[in-house]
Length: 66
Image (tube, rainbow, N blue to C red):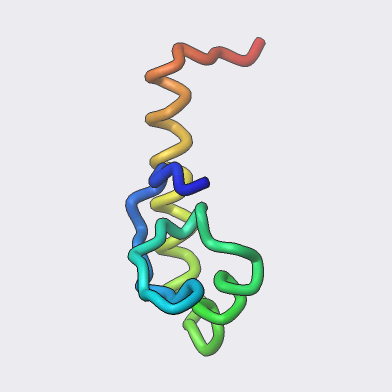
């Protein structure tokens, strides 16, 4: 299921066609392939963006941990 939650898209081949898939919707294997050779700075920017998305989702859902 493609939920398009994080807004970080990659073009991947699935079957006979290419699709733009959100990072959080990639399979483990696709994430592994996309991450190969990426710098620590690149991974840090991905992590920071994902953290921002989680914060926004928590605010939208009015989630508070006590």
